[in-house]
Amino acid sequence: MRPMVYLKNVVTLAHAPELCNGCGACLSVCPRRVLQRLNGKVGIARRDACIECGACQRNCPHGAVTVKAGVGCASALINQMLGRKKVCCTVGD
Amino acid sequence: MRPPRLDQPFVTGVMDTPAGPVPRVSKVFSGKDRMGAFKARWGIGRMNYRVDAGLYAIGEPTAESPVFVTANYKLTFDLLRRAIASIDGWVLVLDTLGINVWCAAGKGTFGTDELVDRIEASRLGGIVNHRKLILPQLGGPGVAGHEVKKRSGFHVVYGPVRAEEIPEFLEKGLKAEERMRTKDFGFMERLALVPMEVVPAVRLGLIVAAGLFILCFLLGGLSLSKALEWFVVPAGAIGASIFAGAVLTPLLLPWLPGRAFSTKGLVMGILSALLVLFLSHGSGMLERIGLFVSIPAMSAYLAMNFTGSSTFTSLSGVRKELRFALPLEIGGAGAGLLMWIIALLGR
Image (cartoon, rainbow over all chains, first blue to last red; front, top):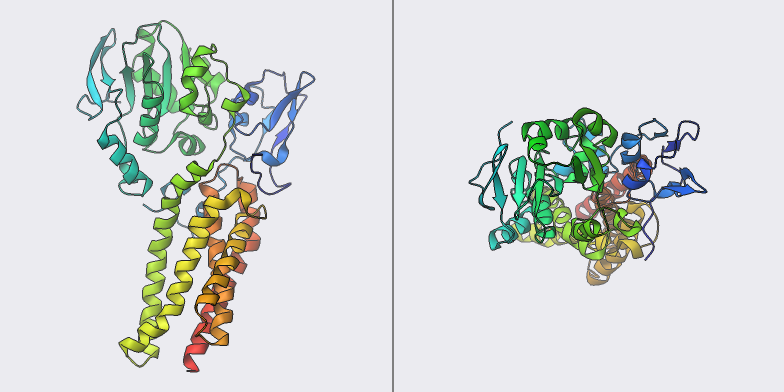
């Protein structure tokens, strides 16, 4: 089955080819195969599959990949709006 | 940083190393481990289901054996322990406050600093000859491989997403295939997450139901039998919403229409509302409209909460979804409640 994809055209992922030396660190950490090597150059191949986890940005030694990383969790966002400190993984405890 | 205790239930012995004694972990997944995992899935003692951070041995590791890094959530630790039961190796457990790798990486507790400190504290450099660490790929959001290298001399190799694929990853010379690099979200995985959707939803549902029952009791002139009769409709609505939004929507996720989780939950909610209407043919028109408005709204809300447990949502996406869905969900549930109260007053 094809992997599920969330909303279209929302993610903040950006790749700056002029800073990229093609080391491929981002390729091995992306769990959604968003970044891919095409004709030897790294680029964004499946933008809407991005979940903004931030692994690519964290592991890019050259600052070529940027994203506003965060967790796509409604209850965490709602808690945040309500000014509660609880975060996603601790909901229910 | 204290070394891990030797009296933890899954520790079967001690391994002497140049850096001192290291606990050896059992390769057997015991009934107690199974019970612990089951309880964690249902949210019982889940936030305190931990192992001590630090270095462990599995099998008969040598100075050449691979080092696997993981989180100190026991469910995570056990997954790794089972996956590498056939391997002699070292397990470096980071203190992630009992949170799984992915969530902890997102928060930074499964992070560069903790990893570098833990390497230092466990004196790993004196135990192994090589300078390679195998990290779960989903630790990527927290750990900057190049920084770890700079600060500790250890080279981070991102292994497969799923621990079960580690043996194959090792056989292939630390090469991960495309399949090992992607996070899927299969039916069984979604099923395992359903209890933690249901438990908080039921908790909230019971509070709301208790409030509505008191309302029935007061509006019904303090008559218990009347209150019970009136209470059936909202109780049914809450139950149907939880089943639609927190159970069926997660399970049927890929087959439900729409991209937003609230859309999927809305569809499931409309279907279950129709079923409730079919079963409750005795109630009045206003009540029926109220049911048809509130059940899909509550189901959509609960479905939206599954975004955090899913593996393919983004913060920007959820923010967008909340903006359009939350007002509608609150409005729908509120309108349904209002219609029900008006219907009650008119009796």
